Amino acid sequence: MSDNVCPRNSTIFVTGGAGFIGSHVVDRLVSIGNEVIVVDDLSCGKKENINKRAAFYPADIKNEDGLKRIFENHRIDYVIHQAARINLNVMLEEPLKDVQSSVLGTLNLLKCCVDFGVKKIIYASSVAVYGRAKKLPVAETDELVPIYSYGIAKKCAEEYVRYYSGYYGLNYSILRYANVYGPRQPIYGEVGVIAIYTEHAIKGEPLVIYGDGNHLRDYIYIDDVVDVTLRTLSCGDRETFNVGCGVGRSVKEVFGYFCSVSGKTLPHEYKPERFGELGFFYCDISKLSSVIRYSPKVSIEEGIYKTLSYYRGSH
Image (cartoon, rainbow, N blue to C red; front, side, top):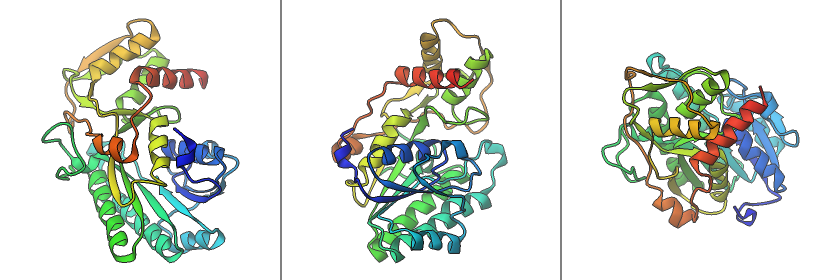
């Protein structure tokens, strides 16, 4: 990415900046000369992920007064809203917590953006807003029928971002991330097949393939996600974008890549289909390509290699 498309010498507020995606965003912003304010309640993020050159507030964005005080302390130019509650088990959904995290926290943030004259907010949404795809690839204009509480809350938050734009003139970009993977992603629990396979490969445990292994997902490496996120600070105004690779990869293909980068056939086992599987999904990224002028740079094989190398080095 050419760094000249991202603002420099600006003050940028990043929620969830101790988390997987947020911490990578913060690192890049700092590296090109921005002042970065990180807010994270550390419920999911890790303190060691936070860039030492960023100002850190261990705060919860659901606390309206506390959030307002941070905005009063800094002249904030841009907001990148990455904070989200991640549910690791679809059988144990907690809709109230999803609403508190994705909706109420976002509303507090939007109000501060308007009250303190923020130039633009980038909202990290998710392809979970689509639910089960009726056709492939899935475009931004397709119907939103989320089937999980997380996706429902993200859809609602998106609507409030547009509401604040329409009524108060707040500039925004909404980014619907596909399956993001890479270093710092938590490799425990049900957090995506690449993360799970990484953990199992490091431990020498069998990699599990559920059902026939033909389900498709759209995997995108963290560096590409950061590139897109920073680009939208200065383009793609008042637009919504799918952020994926635009290619569906099956679980069996992903397993093959793990074997390829490991140089051997890894132990594996087949198990019955799990409840709640979304089936087949990948994004239409033509809008990302035409408006943001971006296409992903990191191949899935390279991305898996980098991810495995990172975790093998940290164990």
